[in-house]
Image (tube, rainbow, N blue to C red; front, side, top):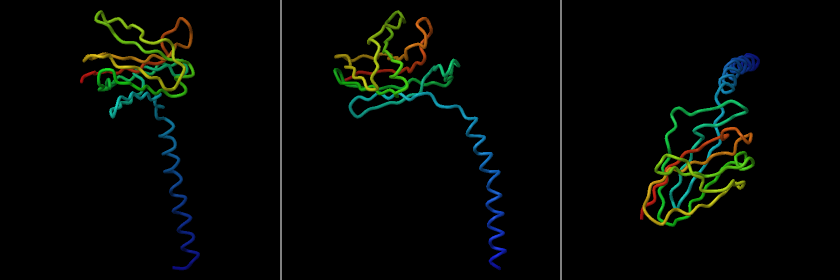
Length: 153
C-alpha cells in the first residue's frame, strides 16, 4: 500500500470517529448532574450518600430510589461527617427523629466541611439526617441526606 493511500485511509478513520464523539458528548450533556456527596465515618466503617432531596437552582431533585445508608459505630465513638464545600458554605445542621417522628436538631448550624459527633454511650439505632440550610429564611431545606446510625458494642 502506498504512503498516500495509507494517509488517506487514516484521515477517513479519524473523520469517522467525529460523529461518535459528538453523540457521546450529547449523551453526557443530557445526564443528570449528581447531588453533593456526604460521607460519615466511624472507626473503620464509612458510608456515603448523595442527597435524598436537593434544591438545584430552584429545581427540586428527588431520588426516588434513595436507600438509607447504615453506619455502624461503637458506644462513645467519634463519628466524622464530611460535606462538600458547597454545602458547608451555606451551612447545614443535624437532626434525629424521636419516638413521635419529630425531627429534633442535634446541632446548631455548621459551616465547616468536617464535623465530629460523639455516638451515644449505649446500644441504639438512630435515624440521622443532615439538612442544608434553606436558601431563604422561610423556605424548606436546600438538601437532605438521610442515614441510620447503629451503635453497638
